Image (cartoon, rainbow, N blue to C red):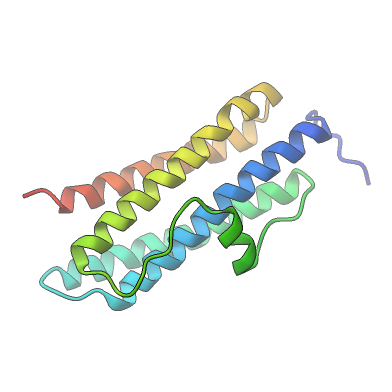
Length: 156
């Protein structure tokens, strides 16, 4: 059945493509955060282990919200490792970094996700897609707060 939500198909397709990039950033950040949760060591172990767990659980739930918005726009959501690897702006890490390097990588990953989300706003605004704008605004707030909290751990 034809979708008639007040946003033309061309704009919905472009927004869905941008959201697919954002979904890939989110999922890649989820995997990295979970990986770091499993492998963190050192004097900050307890703090980081718990912090990373909170963060990866939040990212996991966000994956569903992002994918469902793509579906509501009428397009398939990415869902394979190959899709995510092709669409993400976040680099995988090599090996198991030290705790401070884990923090730095997660700061960079959260900031990359913010940039990906922000890049979508002109298109979303032009299309009058308030639902996607709301989703992106909420996600930007969460990623910026997470980056700030992680950066705070790096202060001397």
